[in-house]
Length: 69
Image 1 (cartoon, rainbow, N blue to C red):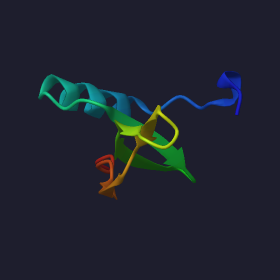
Image 2: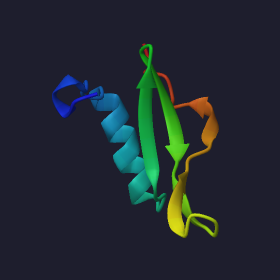
Image 3: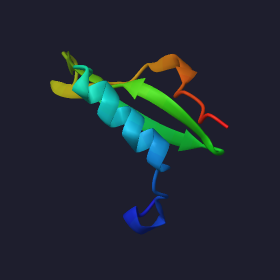
Image 4: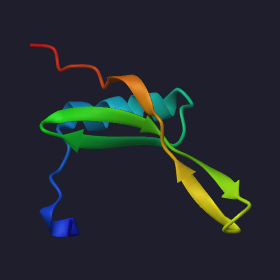
């Protein structure tokens, strides 16, 4: 997907990310699939076979908090 094709995140999502980072959370990543936002905590590890860093992004158990109606 080209950078121009990426959709911007809703304001409540970016505010939530800033709040989490201010609380000391690091390496947070938000991905959107079918209008649902999923939270990932990205980490890297050393792959001994390829001798390169690899990205590991397990999903959190829930998506980011729903916007209050």
